[in-house]
Length: 405
Ligand code: PLP
Image (cartoon, rainbow, N blue to C red):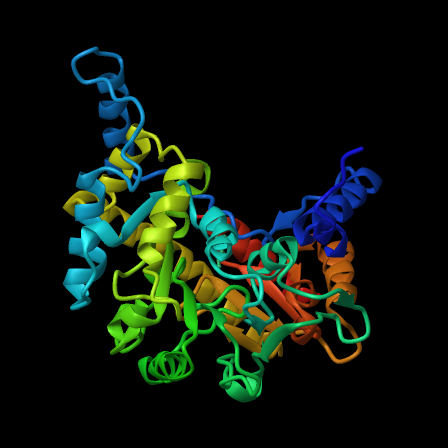
């Protein structure tokens, strides 16, 4: 009789957003007339930019013609896309990254979840708390953690780095030495950015102790502070200690199109002297058959002059929402964070309510859905996340309702 990977049994309940969806569905059933505004899930609402639609149409037509048809894509992605990525995301920022260090994929979630496969099971993992749940859960599934401890709401064996208002939601270096350090800036869920100096501190630390940083820069397009790093490779020495994960979901609205990439520099070697670039190439080639040609052409259009201009307008649109939420909540007397270099607003729940109580309160009194901070980790308790990804009209309406509450 077969057995299962019993590490899966350590996982806690269902995924945060399924719980929210269930609660919202139950509320809607009880209150069919309620007009619910969803500022919970980090999904975008604006349509794809015209330059991207045009590239998609053109690529679809190519697929219908034997002379221009494309089958399986190259393992690492088409050269035209990897070239555009290197030129625009790295060279233009003075970062040293090469085309054969880019691995195109169908999004950052898979890469965030899969990247841990190339590391030994005895590696110690450090994560921010609160955290994007994929980093933790994928390591739980792999068996790199102990059991979940309901007392401190942590998995045994994981190093949690608290992100609090006291440290501007940028963690201190951990006291216990990790091997794998997950960082995400601009941050989901807190909306915090990281200064170059602080990121350099992590890079220096990782090099000193021989750790690797898994840097999730899915929200880099939302950075407005000109001094804030968009890539970890803006830091000296990062090529020797960091992998970077990127997504087209939030900068270009590809949540339903699916495209991302991971950078694994050739200078990055394990303690055994193995190049992580070779390992990830082997893993990628074995388990992944490439993002679709038409999607990679759409990704290329993100870097065209028209694409860049149109996407800037889109990001400005979402950041106008962020500003509206931030100001509206401040005016209503809330303590708020984030929203300046990220599309997330992290607010302190009123004193008498924990995160889920505030969720219920907001849903039942003003029919607004947000995300309870405690769903992202123990140090998210007492906080609540709102996203700027709604429409402007809904955002305004939501803020009006909260202000009147
Ligand atoms: N990384 C972070 C921090 C995210 O918040 C998300 C999505 O919300 C992702 C990765 C997933 O991105 P993708 O849509 O490319 O899978």
